[in-house]
Length: 179
Image (cartoon, rainbow, N blue to C red; front, side):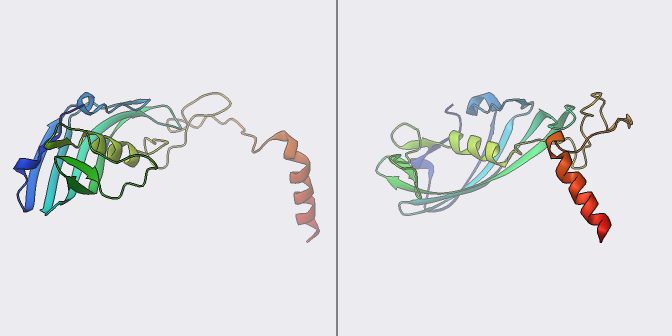
């Protein structure tokens, strides 16, 4: 996990641009139920102003995942934005707004350099949906017979809610009839 390396000696005052292409395994990009079939592309702009670095860029890759409703395998493009303020302290670099208790916020790397692997990895994972869907209107699988309701309507009657609430539903229906 040391593939997106930036050497401080390569950073001049002002705007510096970098392009990286790394394999998902190089930045430990793993997520349960997800396969990353394509490389991760990064286009990064680092603005150096004295001891401050502003890192902005885009991260792109593709993920193969399993739909959280119908269990179909599908591919989707993942685009993430990288935007971090960093501070150069001697030959080390730290995240400027470190708010983790007890964490100094130092980025990994040898003296005079730092790696953006972890930041790129985190941005991809944070922008990934917690429940991936093959499409927004996915109907899922039938809880009665297990049929994929996107492919066919199985006709099963699906009970809404837990049976323990049936008395309350009946009361609500009866109150609605008296109006």
